Length: 153
Image (tube, rainbow, N blue to C red):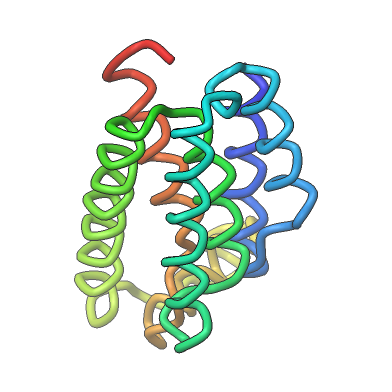
């Protein structure tokens, strides 16, 4: 499914550079429209409400702008009740991700070039030890997968 591929790419880029490309969110928006769920006015209205709420959280510095756009675009794949479940699944996945990062902060060893040649693993371990922001696209993608596996879209 193309939506999964775009979300996997968003996760990869977010882990690497802590940024989500705008074209990924735009691509997911187009896919949601083609999928048909975004055609329902109630779904669009709730998606707009989600965007406004998350935009407020961005404006006060709680969330990143890429996360806001990614959540708003992927929420349009679902009807309003499923959008609520989607947001709860993102929160659950984000909570697990935060616990893993907090647990690893004091326990993760320094990874040298001899240990692994994969630079992104070394950098992520360094970020975890320093308490850097989470790559929240991971939580968004996991929440999306949990919601789509829960029922049909």
